[in-house]
Amino acid sequence: MGSLLRFFIAALKEVFKGGGLYWVWLTALSGLVAIGVLHYLLQVEQGLIVTGMSDQVSWGAYIANFTYLVGVAAAAVMLVIPAYIFHREEIKHVVLIGEGVAVAAVVMCILFVTVDLGRPDRIWHLLPGIGRFNWPDSMLAWDVLVLSGYLVLNLAIPFYILFVKYRGGEPRTLVYFPGVVISIFWAISIHTVTAFLFSSNVARPFWNTAILGPRFLASAFTSGPALIVLALQIIDRFSAFKVKADVIDFIALIITVSLQINLFLFGVEFFTEFYFPTEHGQSAQYLFFGFRGYSALVPWIWTALGLNLVAVTILTLHGLRRIRTLLNVACVLAIVGVWIEKGMGLIVPGFVPTTIGEMFEYVPTRVEILVSTGIWAFGLLIFTLLTKIAIPIELGTLVRGSGPRGAARAKLAPGGSP
Image (cartoon, rainbow, N blue to C red; front, side, top):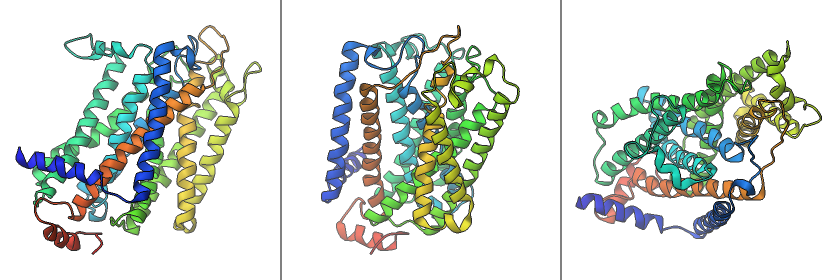
């Protein structure tokens, strides 16, 4: 217990160490979080009327972000598999960064679902033994289960590894490897269950497709690794934690293949909807070309497609992908493109037209935008603090004992700076 307490105290002290840029970053994120909280309190006070949602379009920006971030969380498995199953040491060196992304993403997922509830104080109804969990009948109950379980796994495994390293030891594979194997299947399950949450709604033909699960996974393994590539380069630039070029190239290849598959599945859906149009294709008609004079989402989806096509062109051409600036551009384009496709391009058309043929368009309000920004800022804040603690432990500069010992370990740590 004493070692555990010292670990938490040392971690807390590490969080408060940093230069001016570090504190500017934390201050900016904290400010955005505060703005988000204030607007969420306004939403709680006045109700969901302050959002763009309605009885006809009951899911909007919040669920769009939730759907996207579930994929980001699942993408950590693309580092876990090569690191722990195929023993790629250069990947193992950065796998905890991916785990940090997963933790931050799951926390944001939970927050987006919470703010989407009109009465968040009734969330206790989901607690087993207190409320009625409706498991295994409810897909929502399955989603709560897999998300909370994945969060626990992504906290427990890195915690064990970092705690042992802090004490100066080496983590025992037999202790954490079973959890790693479970987390691999669990990562796939969280996005599959989320896809089932949509495709099981038979009254919404736009979502009622068997390839929604594969599309979710393909897009997840595009946007999640793209965020990790950008994060690793920022960490490499502003800390002593150095990332090998082979790691970036490996993740870039994952992004390339995943985006190619995602666009192929996108094309399959487009062909199915428009080769022989039926009444069930009215939502797709509204999304891509407009319907009955309503076309609010048309610029969104074609922008997303354009961004993804430019990104996949850069990524597919090996010479372009090896240029870091172009790789970063492709990652940003893929991140934004997938967010639009899985967000506004997926959620809203499921409700338009309604089941009785009514047309109600959705536009997020200022409250939704600022609350969403605050949640994203909170997620970045979590990731920043987790990384701030993990890096010195990985480098060996934060260990139990004297400063000289930590310095000596840092010189021996892979990727560390003397």
